[in-house]
Image (cartoon, rainbow, N blue to C red):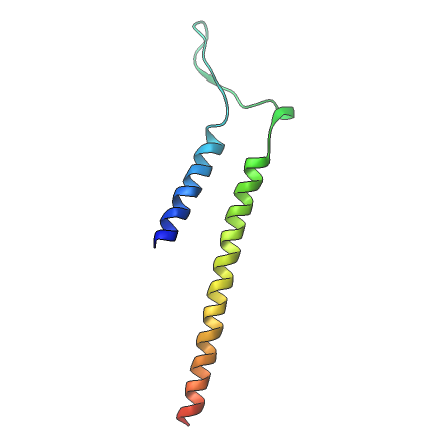
Length: 84
């Protein structure tokens, strides 16, 4: 449970970082505008980190669940064989 809380905090931090990384430009003559960085200056490194963390978490979780299922089925088969 503690691991899930930590993962949630990390994922929230990554989301907030990626959403709020665009600069905010305010002027007394124009209304508040939100602009994204120029296409040539976009740094994709945080995105790749996010994809790696999310994809890695999913892969690790699926591997763990598959392993537990395999061990459970193997144990069940062994118990069925000893009961007969």
